[in-house]
Image: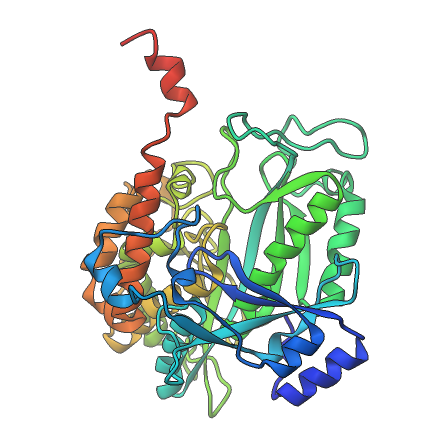
Length: 456
């Protein structure tokens, strides 16, 4: 969203009065990216600044369960189920366009009773990384392209998803990448999405039809890292609500449909010198600065260990397969969409690198935090990248974990990421993802019933 710089609690109250808001949705992004919190009447919100919710809300799996036999998790999250104090970030106040009554939503930060930030909360993790940049006199500038699928409503999780019916009365049966007519099939939906985004002050840009049947992509304009994460968090809620209004689902699963490409969150990254406002990735003569190569070297060195964060679910790894518009390795190249780290053609001030590995299902706060952490470590440790890839990187071997257990082992073993992101965050996050994988392993898939039931 367009961040309201220096917007205070008083400014927020004035805004609420002007909008005649009667209810406020007080939101906290949990580690899975789900919006948790409370809905308060306006009077209660104004009188009770700093509402409380249990600390364990940040320690749940996507299914709502808690790790029960993990010593590191137990050291991080109190066994007495203590409260966190939530404080609204006034800069994030915005409307809820789909609500019947005048309703606002605002994102909150989480604090312990001693006034310190809850260190394993997603916004706190991103703040921690941004402070490292600020201490160096640097400011990251980010933009992203977020992909998602529209599907028919599907109340039975055992049934495969299908592309939705458009205005023509037919569903897509062929690849319609960049097709204007295919987007126009869903004009009423996208008109609502753009209207909602305008009402919420979200800075969304170009809408395109991606490769998959019913797969769309939206671009977000350049922003500071926290502002961009807030935009993506709000946008996911917005698209899902708009789709439901039109009797469809919108999903940000990394791989919702077999035989179709997965969905990514491509993050473009550059870094400015705070004093000069210049892009530190470019030298004075306009050539790539050594620090730019170091940033890429950091992405290459640490992204495999970060995969559990940017590919956070079992389903995420179904996207990371050869020749499906998703990277399978950590190669880099100029204007090369087959690599994990693409350097687009750009001006000197716009020089940047695009991380194409991150899935659309990733928590935006954590995904931005960890990709910035990888680049930061590359810059401070002066890591050199591999030689640039000029051909198709799909011909190279796999260099990324191919499943969640492998990714979690790599994350736990990487001390440098633990130092930058926070030890307690790594402990809590890894415990949650371990439990999610255990829960997944209790489910028997249709493939197993089809091919094993009568043949083995």
